[in-house]
Length: 414
Image (cartoon, rainbow, N blue to C red):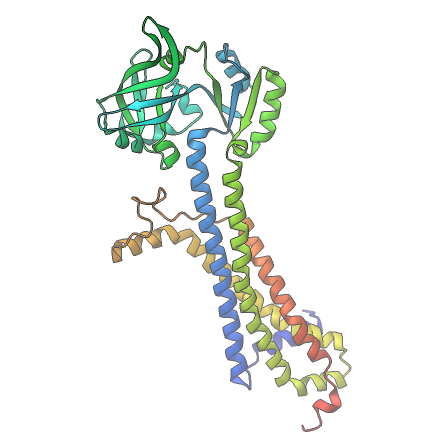
């Protein structure tokens, strides 16, 4: 099979045994360094993707992908609005809600919290809170039952459990013969949920939407929560719904409500990727050293090739093949080992914790107590491309030095 002369000689040099064993050692070290750097970069990016995905799923499990709210008033015909929203092909579910700021008094403590009135039969279409019940029953929130479901930390702060009673004080005054007093109502704790996010576990309570409307003296829900087929469609869907529903409604997306948080995570991932790329750069320095010593070792061969008519450009290409081959081998091994490690990392961490009886992320301190990992092909592609470019650039100077070799001077003492 026909192969270019530069490729043929470059591959021949790669397979040949070195007269200078130290060059072979440096070549092996270069491959190992590139492999380790690529493996580390892929693994770290996968772990960051895992934490990002875990946080995103937990936050969106309680927030929703998009929210329809009335402008200055409640949504009176919420059934019709829900049907109109679900007519959009990207909307998978819609659920009305009522938000109230309230003060809860329990057995041993009291605190302010957000009270959300929901329809238990419709809420699972827009959120995942029902999947995170740790005590009690989700469908206990029936109209007029005055039952309440609390976040786990909120229940601990109040010192209550399922079956206990709490007093809710809504800071909206009403006129009585004794003067203006806030609305006060007793509730029975019928369930406890744990989302794994402090914002919700310690600051959210759920009641039936009808009960919440009575407490807030509202004529309808304050908004409708939407779940989409793809959370990244939230922007286009919100614009379509805003146009269809008219000016009486506003549509907000999860990106608008949590933009700063997710932007910070994205920026952290980019910065970490840039910093870890320096590891690849350090590994490539060994490649430069190896090629420089190889050029020095092959001075006589270069001179003979030049006298046979090989051009400086061909000499340069021949030694670039050497560096690129080392880079390819290191990248291939790094991608393979890094992908395998990223895939099995949660199991490896669990095994280490069980064998050595250690806990890397204590559930008492961290809401995410495991080490998640999510391998993405885009990250693997970028790491491979950046490492290949570094390897290619590392070959330029040694190959250029080889092309500048003068045959007469190189063969003077041969």
